[in-house]
Length: 385
Image (cartoon, rainbow, N blue to C red; front, side, top):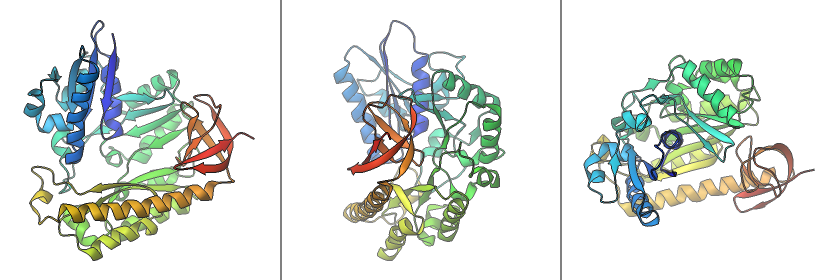
């Protein structure tokens, strides 16, 4: 029996697909495609992945689940390559009704992604994910704790907490992190996936100095202009986003910031776009995910006055160019420094602040100090001293 997984989009999808794969029946070859609907391009890539899986594995049964399949189930069921479509609420129990609802999946058997939450109670005007995932649901502490223990038993060196809106965790994300670190002494490296800056609780700020919490924080910023933020129905202002980053860096001097930004949102003027461009500097962003605005069906933003696709692409390209320049500058600043890295596979590793490093000869799962001897494109070169 062979099970392959194809995960598009978020880390939650990855954790879910791996969980489904672990429960697949013996004697059958399945390809599990966990789809994404965050943009029209993500939906196109999902269909492309399904067709590619069929060409590559003509004998396999293809199971499709995830947000794209949930929002447009019929179109995926009509694809001749697809054997089965499973709705989001039932996906983890596709093959086994007793499967834990806490999804977890390991990357290179080193870094494990553990779901703590699902769904979203917010209604950002550009987003359709809440339609596919439903309301925000926080998973029970005991289930999360036990899942983390199992992932550590399997050899995971680092745990990444993931979900749709993890800062909406019931009782506070920081409180959860503190409880997990107290309950599981083997948990020495805890990392967080995307955060909503306005929802970060005081307990998380209190935890920031703890070296067990990895110092890279990816924020869902989306735009740098207050009017666009209001039209997106975001709940933070530009000033609040900048203040949140300043507070993080004030408490944790080695913190690095990642961000999601949307280019070319409906009604965005050039002046508004330039404010998003400047947000890269104001929030010291060194890892930006730039999304050209994509009008999703049945969302308020799709009914707003649209910019031309050429203009949207141009503004996204400008943001990417600026973000790449900032990232290159950051990587260059690390040359000559000593960094702790977690080695994944093939000599590839990441620092605590999530800078990618090549460490020739290093073994998977090692945590070691290296000297950064140089840069090769988007990777640093690490040498053991």
